Image 1 (cartoon, rainbow, N blue to C red):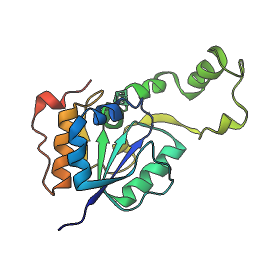
Image 2 (image 1 turned 30 degrees about the vertical axis):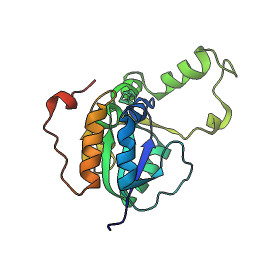
Image 3 (image 1 turned 90 degrees about the vertical axis):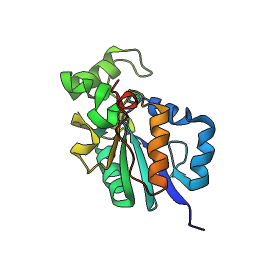
Length: 181
Ligand code: SF4
C-alpha cells in the first residue's frame, strides 16, 4: 500500500472565499483525506511547513511576512498551486496598488471607524510591513499550477487535487470551469 500524501492550504492576502469553495467539494473531502493528510491550513497553527506534496495558496502577496512564508512554502512543496484569482493575478487585493500603501493605511486606520480612531497603530500594530506593491504569487516564486476563479469552481479544485494526489497531470482544458471572476 502506498503511503498517504500530504497537503497544505495557506491563506495570504485573500478573503477566505477560495477556502470556502474548497469546502464546497462537500463529501468528496472524504476522497481527498483518504489519499492525503491535510498537515496545514488556516485553522491549523504552525509556523513551519513539513515537506508536502501539494500546497494550495489563496491570496496575493501583500506583506514582507507573505514573501518569507511563500519562499518557505516553495522550498517544502513538490507542487505549489496558485489558488484563486488573488493568487493568480493579485485581483482585488491589488486595488491598493492604485492608490499606494500610505493612502490605503490612512484610509483604513485614520479615516474609517476603528478602536483607536484617528491614528496609525503604534509600531505598525504588530502587522508585518506592507510591500509597496501587491503581487500575484508567480512574481515571487515559481508556481506549478493555477486555479483561476473568484472563487474557483469546486469541481475544478477537486479535479486538480485528485489528479495531483494520484500522480496524474491535471487536465486544465475545461474552459467553463477555468474562467476568471
Ligand atoms: Fe476571495 Fe476571490 Fe480572492 Fe478567492 S480570489 S481570496 S474568493 S477575492
